[in-house]
Amino acid sequence: MAELEEEVERRQRLGQEAAARKALIARSYHPVRPHIYNTLQDEALAPEFLAAAEYSTSPGADLEGLLQRLETVSGEKRIYRLPVFTAPFCQALLEELEHFEHSDMPKGRPNTMNNYGVLLHELGLDEPLVTPLRERFLQPLMALLYPDCGGGWLDSHRAFVVKYAPGQDHELGCHYDNAELTLNVALGKAFTGGALYFGDLFQAPSALARPLEVEHVVGRGILHRGGQLHGARPLGTGERWNLVVWLRASAVRNRLCPMCCRKPDLVDDDGFGDGFTREEPTTVDACALT
Ligand SMILES: O=C(O)CCC(=O)C(=O)O
Ligand SMILES: [Fe+2]
Image (cartoon, rainbow, N blue to C red; front, side):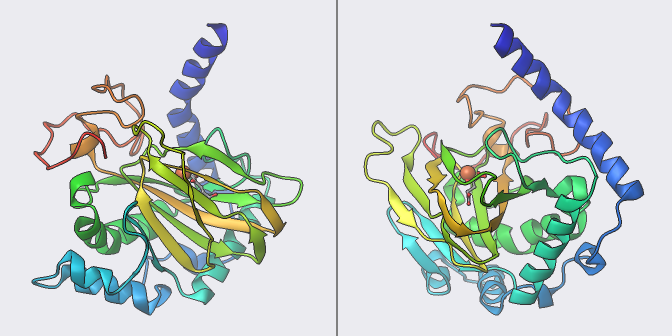
């Protein structure tokens, strides 16, 4: 019980501590690639990603048409893949993240399973990079791919970078995300191993019976439902940095918390918090299992 109480208190402090780190970083951190902090430009995005997003916003766009513009990794598990950023943008983002990692700035870690990596909102990258990525590009794509999981109702996110390297974290246990939908982009560097494995939705009876192995491809992003059980195999060689964006739809999660599967009991928090809102939920067609 004491351990549990301590964990509850730790989680209650997270929002305030993150806000304090963000303020300190904004005051004293000097980026090495300042252009990363400018508003996201189309030039940073892979042509395939731009084309898929543009198609998704065009009149008459449908799922079948979109599926011709991206790779279906598993139709049954509804896992898809497509290039997201250009190689030079991946490189610049990696250089910036590595520079920050080596700085003496305070760092909030992505979650209890990752001891390295960075929370993008603490670095000040939410407003210029992740929010436009979600609103302009991911939302139309996700609305066609996952209309039943809030894909058309995304209104917040939690974005972070996970890092695996020799002597640091090297694998990730099986889990489901605190997200309706997830984008996971392999930024680099060069590595072997580290494949993702996917089971079924976590509510399914034998959800991890026959996992599907999915190798990362540098520059490409994997799209999946947050509730799909998954983990990362051990890193072989090299260093792996991935950008993970947990996408949230308050219209879905306000009704049922995706972590505890109960009606949420809310407390105030800073920023996006965990993506819940106090507004009357919009009516969406969501399946309780997704
Ligand atoms: O290591 C990876 O690429 C997966 C990361 C992940 O699933 C997560 O952070 O939620
Ligand atoms: Fe995950």
